[in-house]
Amino acid sequence: MGLLISEPGIEESRLKLEGDLAGTWVPELEEFWRTTRASHPGGAVCIDLPGVLRVDEAGRYLLALIHESGARMVSGARHRPRIVPDGEMMKRNRRILSILSSCLAVAAILTVACKKGPSGPSPGPVEVSVVTVKPERIVLTTELPGRTSPYLVAEVRPQVNGLIRERAFEEGSNVKAGDLLYQIDPAPYQAAYDQAKAALAMAEANVPAARLRAERLKGLVEIRATGKQNYDDALAALQQAEASVAASKAAADSARINLSYTPIRAPIPGRTGKSSVTVGALVTAYQPVPLAVVQQLDPIYIDVTQSSAELLRLRQGLESGRLKRSGESWSRVKLLLEDGTPYPLAGRLKFRDVTVDPTTGSVILRMVFPNPDSVLLPGMFVRAIVEEGVNEDAILAPQQGITRDQKGLPYALVAGKDDKVEMRMLTLDRAIGERWLVTKGLAAGDRVIVDGLQRIRPGADVKAVPFAATKAEPAAAKTEAAAGSQPAAAK
Image 1: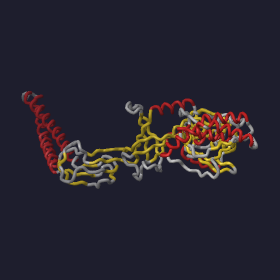
Image 2: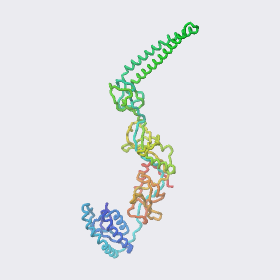
Image 3: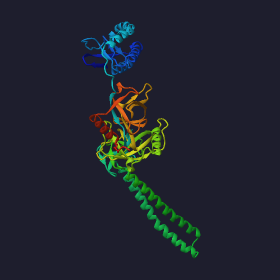
Image 4: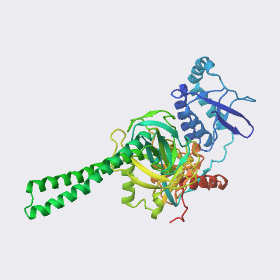
């Protein structure tokens, strides 16, 4: 990226950047500038750059400062800007070394030349654009990754052995609870049931005769017309006949239950999957491979993961009062599909697991979403937008006004009450749209400089003007749409 310098009556010159020259000519040029400005505060200094040079970031910033302070940089009459290819830099470096050695001599000549020229007016404050921050009411949300899972799942398995005579459903169709899925050959089970009923009838036929004999012998025993042993034998025969009836009833019930298992029905309503068997296949009771799987997809579960560190941060924000719950709306959840499109229906948070996974350090959150059109299928990757709470006095700063130092720490340049530039170190929470949520470092009413940062430094005088509304309004609109924020009046 070149540095474009334009002065009235002077051709434009473009400087290319290169880090090799940072430690050689830039300090000398800076020292020369300070000496010249100290001796001639009202004059203008002419710096001749006859060629295309490469400077680093510090060099570009230095040249910009010198230019803002009144220096006039020229590159020779009718000089056409051009870019030096990387392959030519080794040759140019040799030439630059000779130029550097004569830098101090040129500085002396330029000083004399500038003394002869008319002195220009002293530069005034630099005009910068500012955005005044104010408290806003925003609803803080977080996006959590997760996957869908069916509301109910039933793996259909046979409960008796036999051959499949019929498959009564279409794969992928919706079924109701109790609908016929498969029919196992019922003939052997029907015969077993009939046999059990016949055995039950035989056992029941023996009971009346045994009961009458026992009753007659009971009367004879009372008048001592027969021995007590005969009565005891008759009573035992009656009890055996009654027990035989009970056993026959149980056998008949077992045969009936086995017969009822031959039609395999859907245990739950839902959508069927692929069938693992065809007509004529031999199946066994409780086999490990299910015949089919029925899944209920409306409603549907969304299982997402949230780190335990985020849970602790959220709890601290709620306990400190910085965040507040907004009634029952905190349990409402929105959804983004795999392609980033929003899901039209809202869900609700069902529960948060109490166990932290030691391998990932996260917990499971389960949501329930309506799925009438079966848009959500089991196993889909989605992102759930969960509401954390409401911040009534949030401070949002535009991202273009936030810079980071060499250590990566964020800071902002603020126009103070006396229109002097102040540096504020910041603590950032998160990005909301095109703005940063600032938790420390800025207060309501601070004027954050967003345009002209390259021409100022801390302590410099500036002329603060409001940032263009045509640029600021779309950014604010995007922020409110992304964060679900509701603007509030400044407090």
